[in-house]
Image (cartoon, rainbow, N blue to C red; front, side):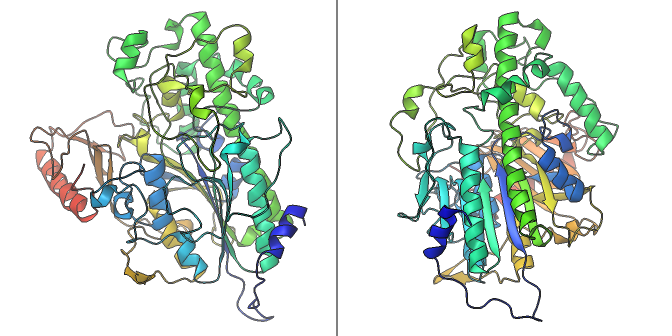
Length: 567
């Protein structure tokens, strides 16, 4: 055992109720891995050119979901995953922070329970690492026994160990020599230590690993970045077409969808100031850019790709630990992303204010959005330093458009590019057709009922003396077993970007709700997602009665799930 894990084990109580010989087989362990701002097509097994051999192997031995959804942004998606509810029901409909309306309190309210609270109550050890971002009360107050990462803030400097905290206070943590710390590696180091503790306790365990990668600031080991530079010098137009071809070959998409136009940019005002958009407000063609700009942009995406590969390498470390200890066959592994690729703020990305990262407080990343610094064009020796310590930037909406291939728009929108996530499920005991792609419509809130079912837990009506809402999600186990999908309706809302999906029909609109309902001039778009997953053929004018019915259903569900009243 690692020395650090031995110290942890001495601080825990060993379970005395291990199953006796001849009793029921041990309950499965649960490993949930959440990426931050990963696009739908970035992984190799979803059509991307980024090297992700470990996730690809999990997909080859497990299943991939083609139509899994999240809640469009980091904190709402985390609220939904942790509670099995819509994010508004859990209290985080928009962002963390103070708010008075029921769906927008900015923290997990007392009308919900977390995965950790439910599973811990049935004998599971519960561990979390990485990005919390659902405000106070923190992970220790919401059912987790051990934590390493950052509790507050949407982003962290991956080269800065002082932004991380170990909870409960006084627990031993690893120390890193100067230049050795990298957040993705450190999160995994502590996750492995927690697994050793769980093995000593003899209980089944829940491990929730929420990586900071690949959220901006985009940072990665320079030697890994160098391996991707030539790839991205080819530009986003060529690579988008190649991703689409691979997705069709893999069976993630039918042969029908064509590559849509480059998505609109995310922030028109910034792009106008920089002169970085086309006349129609879309991302520019790669070949229209000058050589210095292409060199800067190729390096930005190369750093992003290296950040994804480094995350995959660390996931491989977790899987190898399970394999070495004979746990892989009896562990449900779920991998997904919290939202679509991040377009902030315009085609070329932005650079961050280094003052935000000075004098870090343990457990606190960066909070609050401020106008970005002017985009900085890196030249000469600056190029090789991009992504290393002291380098703070995003990769922009044009590369985010590639990351979401072939979907429309980005993080925080209710179009498919904002809400569709890769989902890989690996559990040899339950998957009879490894390597299959599931067409089932799923959602991050399905994680809770899945875990409740496989753990033999009972989801409570009351918890700690208070009533809690019933789960909105549904178990993924029927889908894992290959059973037919069942009809369902899903609701989406974030920052007034709204949608409702019923069967294959999806009604979507931007900025169309007000405090108690819809704006009088609300303009809905209607798509058949089965035939048009890229949302390029708006059928609203052709089917006004369907628009009216789904619009009414959206309002009814929005009131029930606390989307309304809206701020």
